[in-house]
Amino acid sequence: MRPKTEPEIEAMRQGGHQLAVILKTLSEEVAPGVSGKDISAHAMELVKKAGLQPVLLGYEGFPDIMCISVNDAVVHGIPSKTSFKQGDVVKLDLTVGHKGLVVDSALTVVAGDAEIPKDVQRLLDGTKKSLEAGIAAIHGEGTAIGDIASAIQDVLEKNGLGVVRDLVGHGVGYGVHEGLEVPNYGHAGTGRKLVAGATIAIEPMATLGDWRVNLLRDNWTVVSRDHSLTAHFEHTVLVTEAGSEILTV
Ligand code: MF3
Ligand code: CO
Ligand code: CO
Image (cartoon, rainbow, N blue to C red):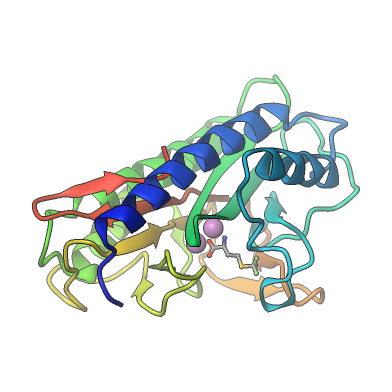
């Protein structure tokens, strides 16, 4: 993966910011009575209005512009017409193109305004904190993939969460997935070393129970095998000479 040039980074920074704004807007619309389809239809509108490319639509045959995964569904859920219910744990994952470069981000919210159960709060906070820890582990050029992976695993396990292993973060920019894999478990100092200008999607996925997952018969949706609740947070991050920059903010 060749390092991105300054103009390419700037395009990802701009696209990433617009993606963050759209994702925040959509996350605030998740509520009982609203469906995944409602959210993805609005996503399409907002993406078009911003002049971004809906790169997920048709990607490897995926039938929608974004992934929406509910409760035991971890990732790659297809937005459905079923309305969210109070307390549903909803993952929104949106990937867009801007000036030919791709950025990718995801977050998890709970539908409704009822008090969030303690274990669900632990799931959301722990997974979000693990993403922050993974990003903080990037100390610039020469950071090993394992440095990021072990920082994520550490936080997830300290929060008593299952660490999903079958899916990983990835290089991103020239395409949705650029080959390089960023697992959410591993040992510091191991794996490939990152160069300045590398852009990666870091995306911890966690469960409130067992870490194992199954693929549903729709051939897309990945669910926790024990049907425990799951969370997913993702940012596209630039590796710099001496640190990192989150591009999807
Ligand atoms: N946004 C997803 C990711 O984080 C990619 C989804 S691929 C799809 O890697 F085909 F399921 F849409
Ligand atoms: Co994503
Ligand atoms: Co991704």
